[in-house]
Image 1 (cartoon, helix red, strand yellow):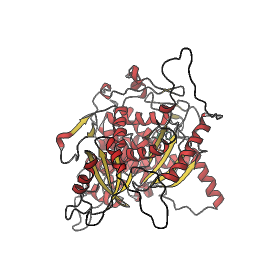
Image 2 (cartoon, helix red, strand yellow):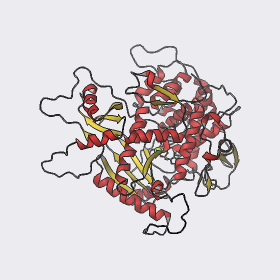
Image 3 (cartoon, helix red, strand yellow):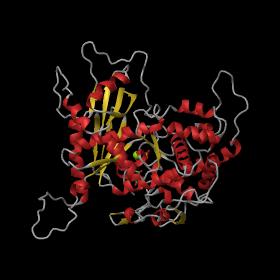
Image 4 (cartoon, helix red, strand yellow):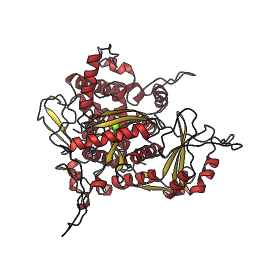
Length: 543
Ligand code: CTP
Ligand code: MG
């Protein structure tokens, strides 16, 4: 079970639970995996159904358009089915037989997407009687429930693995993320027929938690590529409009796509254009999936850092366990937040964890330089003058065996950063070594692909102090508490929070002498707008 590589499960069956023989367990390169998921999303549709829908009846009805290779249900605001056909042609047939909605007082915008509603006519009935469908959860369970489950475990190590399985993205959730990207791609493809929309960030880097945002990257490159052969004699060139900068082009493309998503794409609401941020983006909610989406373009380095994190998460299964636990701990104690600001971002926090794992003896993770040295010719990658080459073949990554338990690593992580010389040292993932700080920001984490940039430039001294104080308290707490489940469990009542569960309680922050989540007094509107603008311009910068 404790294999060094975390295999990626690729499901090619109608229902993975029913047909285990179809389960293919393969370790894939990031690109191969993304490409496979993108292609599967292209032949999928999202259907709103009745809560009592029968899977059998639905599949029978849809099979008139071709074989369904995968199908699952979830409940959000209503019940939805994600249906993947074996062939993309089936979608053509399906669209041909789909009706326009009948409206009484309004008129529908005739954009035919792959978001559909299952309707019934006359005597037909969607329900499957007592055979109700299984709903796959798309959000993490509430904290109280999680703490109870953790407290029922027997050891901190078991708590850590329970936490990982409760929080990590499921195969279904990732499929839904790719499907939403594919639906947005359909809108952009009206202008840029060969464009693609890729998820990046925590949706694909191996560290996503159920409910995390969906970062999307609109890639127009496929559409703008030059022919490989150098023309001899005559050749034709496109006439194109010009803009002053790459940034201006990105802004105008995103602006038009945002308009179209707003006007045409069903289910997409609350569209905000945040085009003046360092990395221009369009933010919206995709209601049927419940995802908060951030669409960017021209953000190739971020795509590459997602790949780097994916490689790290695949090297050893303890990596994801530690990252999810520390991220959760940081979130409950307000070290990180869902809004951008002067606090540590999840990306910075992850970098701190990965760095810590590089410094173990023997190391649990390779350095970025080692990943570059293992790369072959086909892995060479340069983005805007930065060498972003890393090995894609995960089987080449071999490390000396390190047998530390996850519990030990968690404890050591807290001790490491409780005592880290942040005031003069910088974190360098390329070398796996700390080095002198090149500038005087409180926290300095060198961007692994853009060496002159600090990933955590936004973090102020107070927020760093908070993190360090909580690390100190948590290290101390685990020393006292480690492995010590209370002997007596109150009968009838819920188990007392202990170990990892107790580490997530607000009392820990109080003991550390730091305030929990502050309920800020409302500032005057002008101040709020100012800080909002500030946080927007620091967020999503690919620093
Ligand atoms: N990113 C970056 N530099 C930053 C912030 C973000 O390069 N200073 C890139 C990283 O590749 C990151 C991605 O943008 O993974 C998405 O950023 P964000 O959504 O903030 O982080 P996630 O890793 O997706 O984590 P979360 O679950 O908080 O969304
Ligand atoms: Mg994200």
